[in-house]
Length: 475
Image 1: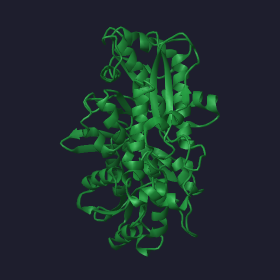
Image 2: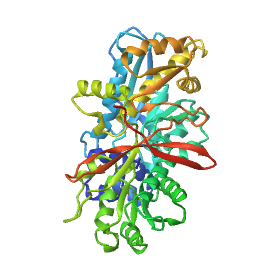
Image 3: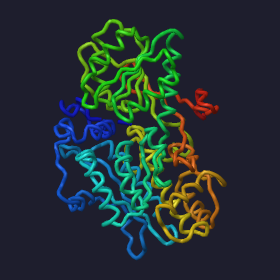
């Protein structure tokens, strides 16, 4: 997923739109745009990190060693308010830690998580603040693995984690670039590559227009936007017309005008929540696009889209969007019930909340493998990464509290297990550190609400060919 663009200048973006800002702000780092939008300076040394990393999630039990994890999240917004998007992540991770630590240990260790508040400053100094926070977590707090959020932050801090041989696992990073990192096998993620999202978006758009119609792609210039636009274009072939705009929102009007000049029958938008709203406003100014179907990538597939300011008479009704997801399974429904009971909230209101939950479970279980007879008894980044390779075969296990002891016991004995996460089956590719996923589609209904509209699965046929088809929900 991506944010910066005009919403930071107009201060209209809600907290839930944060992930989009995260990617785009970093791209502009070091420029006047970043200095204006991010409004911070790089501290003289990394001592500032101690104050940013005060949130510790554990069970408060003394007398046992801990398995220490770190996370970099925007706990608070630039204005000092609680970031509700990251709050969803933190709730999910807290739930995972409470379940893992409830009356048990993992090889004699309890799980503990220290969260650093980026305060939306991850992009400052070309990402130096992010790297300083990661450095402090490893060198001073002694964490053995770090959890990141989206693609750009993951790409930024991996230079720190890989150099120190620590595992880095991302919650919502989807950029194809991560597949090809020279990371010594130490960077993993639970969200799928945008290669697949591009194929799904192309398929959805193709199903709504004639075979000869042009489909316009309006995308932000960023690793996120460039990667998705390339995937969409490859799937559509010559009928795709790509128009880009800058990370600070500059050029949106020209990009939309380009789509109008193409007489596009459908428009696929790859942008943040705030930029998407501006694109929709601009689209309404061109009669040529009045009947064009509108499709949105995951950067705007969030309930906060409905809170964005639209011009009089402009509507999002009928727009459809995609984000990684599977039809609700017994594992997900159980997770959602436990989450709701603990926090009085629906995890579906925060995209990737279930992925945040799964990241903690995966790392903790991989650490069990490292401690067991299959590993060498030592916990290191390489050992945890090796443990992750043993979660996708063998006895099937859902991520539920009553299965934790059995999962840990099998891993300590050197036996593989096949885990089913709240985000779906986690069949990790051991070479790329990625787990494939289906895609949920959502649409804006007549009442102006974003509601679920089904799911798509992708089959890799080889040779760059893929088959896309609907996934039916289990009754």
